Length: 194
Image (cartoon, rainbow, N blue to C red; front, side, top):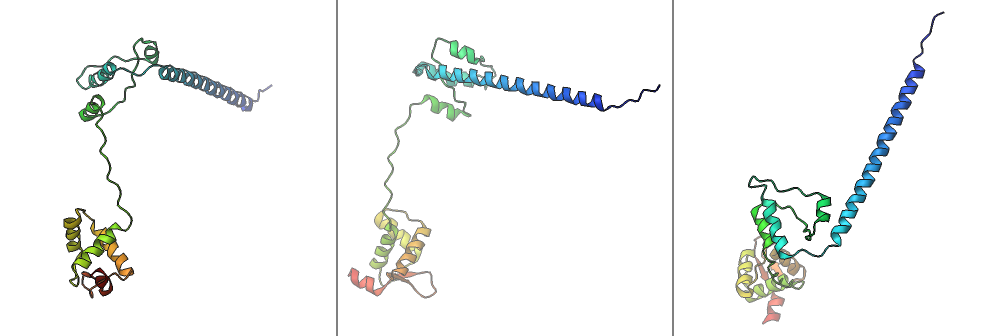
């Protein structure tokens, strides 16, 4: 009697064993992730419950961070050692460069006050005033910019000047002289100014 071998049953058993092994690996991974997440959250809760660090411990943190740059290796602290230490732990923000380390120890400088933003239409008003003062002479944008800077003490960008000129032309308060790159105040606006 001859034995006829059919490999289908053994292949199915191997496939089932492989699936079971993969399920076990995934279950172990999920369990390890959950344990790690729980430990991390506990460390965060412990850290959040501690008082703010003192100035002495905050000044010591950049010195310890710079030790690795000089060739010495700082002591490695585990999460358990951080939570178990009696001294309040400080959050160490890793920054690169000497300037960044200096900013962590220096007291914060007071912020400079911002100058208020000019009102809408201020550039067009400035350009119109300069054109009216120089009427009937036509001016180039560079001359307008220089006059505004001299009279008002404000540096206006060339794009802002050309935009303001476009607004004045639309309101018929200024006109371009032919195909040149010069503008002048219109007669009605110049007459109203005088």
